[in-house]
Length: 172
Image 1 (cartoon, rainbow, N blue to C red):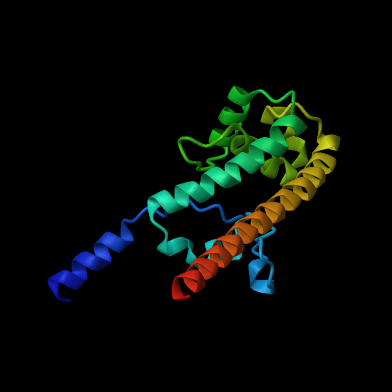
Image 2: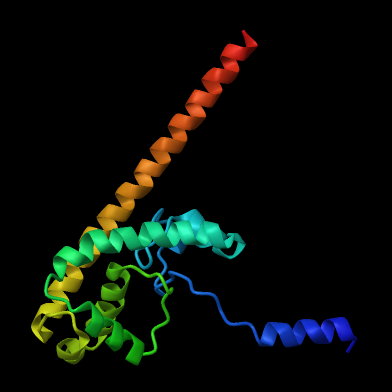
């Protein structure tokens, strides 16, 4: 094996996978414009690996803002310090600057699969509350993500219309 190829193989083996918002249940493959799992726009899912760190951070911030908007009011009795310890104990990797909503999301996601962990999660809910809270969260956050997509599309459409008008005016 030549030296350059050998170095490439070694460096690839040592890479730490970058964090991604992927929740492992992508619906964009079925034609959804907003993924039901991670709530990224379909083009963000497709192009994620080509994004710069700044582009990825912008997506993370939008997604975290949505989680803050939905989960913080849904879980008013959550103890953030306890939640942080819980998700850390479950070896969940999150960005260093992850929002409160992001941390609540990961704890709730764990409890959604294991209701008996609700009492130790720090979310301030009981086992029987996990499913109704999760279902309400999913309903609200998907609606918010779709509205965010539609607003982004309308902005882009408005910008392109204005550019076309400006180009037409320049030609006259």
